[in-house]
Image (cartoon, rainbow, N blue to C red; front, side):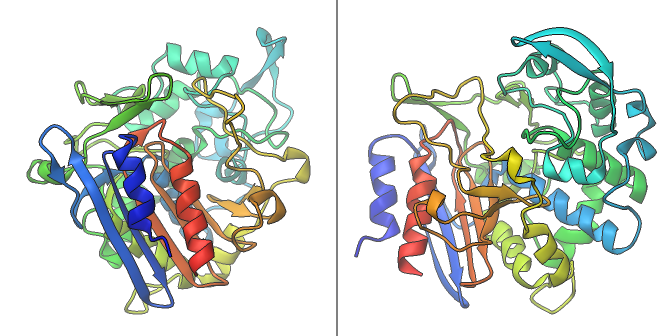
Length: 396
């Protein structure tokens, strides 16, 4: 029987990934390991306490913090966002013909908190291949390493939406807007909210937007894979900007809703395990099980399927496949709704998400599986996650 070490070793031998760490928990049995290096230049080995940039795996944490506010009746999913962010009161929507922006028109419907969670609000993302994404890039949206979340969201409010809210699905900066709403409702900075409501009670001691200088030696270096010439290159962090996104190391004022957190495999597994019961290991409730069940349900209209993330770097050749085929979207997670379109693997209702540097996690309530995959390669080989997934569902 082939094990994960054998599977992952091939990626390291082919120099597609410098190092890979994994952790799987099934019915309280743990299977974990690490291969390769966190730093190719010095050949520093990955260790159990290695720290990673988790990129978009920040988003599900923001989603949980949002639903905590819902449980406390501090917000409503149907609240228009301009209740909390008046700068979005006069939003307009782009009028686009043949991929060209002709004009803007007033919105018919205002985006809501639920739209933000579902990525149906009408926002875009800097790396996507639409006309609004180009505008984001032109104003360096979320590219600063010194700006506050408040400043970035105000900058976003000066631009129109790409489409009418609730009419399409598009992966977007909406979780950054949602994070700013959390700050306003709670009257605290995002770092403090997440620390108090999630990280401290779960004892996720290595998860933060801020990396203490003494922990820099534990950080896996960031790499990017070039599929045209099959080379792996390191991202040099000066001025701490990766893939056009600000990602500072030691800025205690930095926070974002869509990316920015540092974490470890151990810490993130604590969060993933919590998504089964909603409780800490000592029984303290972080969020109710009923709320988790509601979050993991598909909330998208079937007319939005298939959902897909297509960036400017996406090469749709004969090797391309949509890794969201068979998935819907819940309140902060992808969720499996069609086994046949997922190669008859998995369990209906399996949910989770991933990060830009090839990090990944899943939660399966039916089979009581939690899984976390950590590495640091932008534009990484998507087959890594597929092989991880296939291993899980052929062995558990």
